[in-house]
Each structure stands twice: as C-alpha cells, then as structure tokens.
Length: 237
Image (cartoon, rainbow, N blue to C red; front, side, top):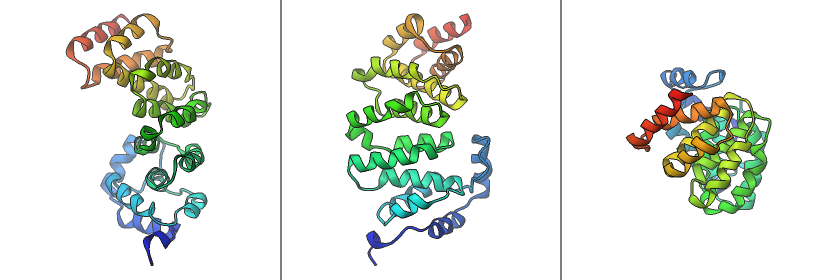
C-alpha cells in the first residue's frame, strides 16, 4: 500500500507516542508547562519527523475525530496541518479548526513557527489572524501575537503590527507575554523606531510594557548600548 493511501488512526498515533516516551523529558517538559498534566514526554524532533510522515497519509478523518487525550496528540495535529501539501485556502480552513484546540504556549508557538505558508502568502495570513487579535480566549490571542512576531517582522508591517499588538487586551498571562515577546522581537529588528515608540508613544498596559523591556534586555540580538538605555527605562519604572 502506498503511503498516500494509508490511513492515520488514533491507535497508530498512540503506539508511536508510547514507543517514544522519555520519562526524564516528560518531567522536564512538564516543568515548563504548568497546568498541563497530559504530557507523555516525546521530544519535538521525533514529533516533527512522525508528523511529516503522517502528513503524506490520509490524515483528515483522524484530525477531525481525534480527542487529544495527550498533549503530543494536539501537537501532532497542528504539525500535520502545517506540513501537509495543500493550497493556502484549504490550509487556512484547517488552521481555523485547529486554533481553538490550542491550550498551551508550547503547542501555540510550535504551530505558529511551523506554518511556513504564512511567508508564502503573507496577505492571506495577515487578514486571517486579525479576528484573533481581539479574541477573549488566551491562546487565540497568543496565536495572533506569535504569528506576528514569527512572520511579519518586516518594515512594511511595522506600524500596523504595533497597532495590532496594542489591540490585544486579553488578560491571560500567556497572551500578555506573547505581546511582550513580540515587542522585543520588533525592537531587535527596528531598534530606533521601537525605542521612540517605547519612550514616547506606546499604549501597552504596565505589565506588558515592563515585560517588553525585560525581554529586550534578555535578547542576544540587541546591542549593549540599547540594552543600557532599556535598563535605565526599567529602573525609572
């Protein structure tokens, strides 16, 4: 049977997960995801390789029916959507189905970084993520912010991206931290413009502003002189 004719099943997926479980890694990864208690402990390179194989098979029924008993099953569903061959319109249909199932920063960030289609079809994705900016759901808002920092750190998007980040008012920790992360990434790419923004024109809430400054000082992409200025801003409060 050709691979493209093979069906992905929950049993097949769980057999793979059981065979690749690493108890030590499960303990480590669980410590990074407080509140997520269904981690089996399969390393990301193994999940990526397996999902690339699944993406060549008949995966759509499994995607629709999966109950995501395990954290890694959710991760695999997102990776398959990102890796499978399909046109932009169909992929966005599956992205729309998957985003509500994101329930951790780990799944969110891995999914967003793997959606390379966003670099091929920026206008389609730029429009697609707009509704998520004002979502009341924490990980939908984080999805929007991480998509911005992962695929739209370009001068032509700078002004509007900042406006979009400011429009994210979801109060969850992981949504706010994603906005702060995004601000730091834009700062690394456009330090002069972003310094002016943070000094004179930002509309970020206090928590997000302070976390943005912190992340800038932690970035290896920001030079020492800029970090000195940012540290002084942090000290001033």
